[in-house]
Length: 143
Image 1 (cartoon, one colour):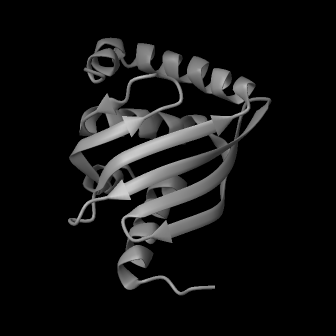
Image 2 (cartoon, rainbow, N blue to C red):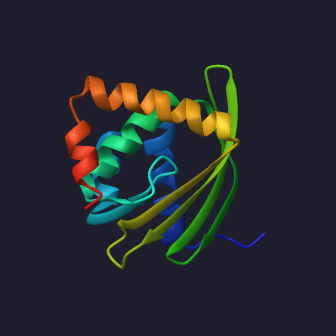
Image 3 (cartoon, rainbow, N blue to C red):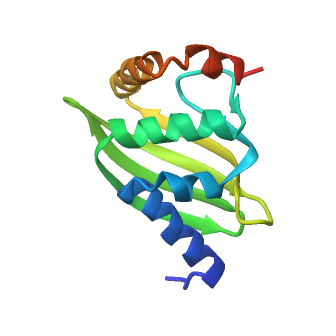
C-alpha cells in the first residue's frame, strides 16, 4: 500500500473530524466559498459554501452507522466509498472530492444506491431543510 503524502494525511484527518466528530467548524474551513456540490437528490448542482455546509451537516446528522470502506486519494482528487443506514434502509455510496491549491474543497459529488436509500435520504433532507426554513436557499443555490 502506498504511503500517503503529509498533505493528504492532514486533509484526510481533518475530513474524518468532520464526518465522525460532527466538526462543523472544520467543515466550514475545508469548503471553498465557490464550492459546487452535486447531490443525488437534485439534477443541478448546489453552488456556494452556505448550501454545501447546510447539506453536509444535515447528512452527517441523518446518516447512521456511517463507515468508509475505501479511500482513494490521488493528488487533488479523492474517491471515498462509504456505507450508512437511514432508519431501516442501508445504502452504499461514493464521495468524489476535488481540492484546490489552498487545501479547500471546490467540488463535491455524491453517488448513492439503492434507490430506496436515495428516497429515504430525500425525505429526511426535505424535513431538515423545511424545519430550518431553508427551502428557498437550497433552491436558489442551483442557479
